[in-house]
Amino acid sequence: MEGSLITEAGLERVRVELDHLKGARRTELTERIRQAILTEANPAENPAYLNARDEQAMLELRIARLEERLSDVRVVQPQDPNGVVDIGEIVRLRDVETGETLKFELVGSLEANTGLGKVSVESPIGRALLGRRKGEMVAVQAPKGSVQFKILGIEEPRVSQV
Image (cartoon, rainbow, N blue to C red; front, side):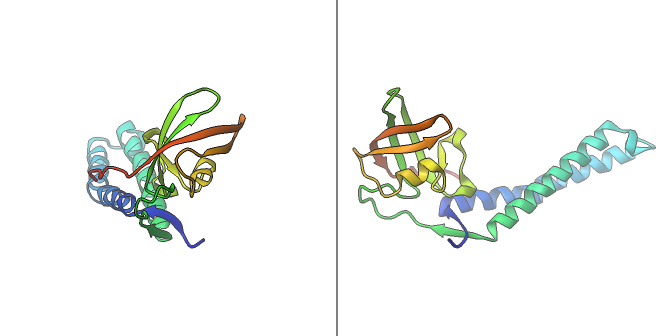
């Protein structure tokens, strides 16, 4: 497959984050380092300086990782609603064993965030759901074994603010 998959909205969110990190966040950390150097004769003994330098290193690593990942993405557009699970759609599921209801938006790996209900189409559950229809049963291999889900519904995502 050519590159990581990402939705247009996900690409825009990543670009906004990258612009923020390279602009305002970088400037803020540079100023904190400058202030720490000015307040201490030996910056290496100044906790504020050391903390800001550590944050700067983590910031630069995050920027490099985002730029690397963005250099190899393939933007995909959700298909017109046709009753088949596709990237960019929200899927409601019921765990057959527990009865728990779950809701996931299928996205590319770069924008996946399970805490926000965004699951990569490249994950086990994402792969199991792609191409399926409402009412179908899907089996997903999880660390605790196979989990059975019933697809309760497929929805188009709401347009979110970036």
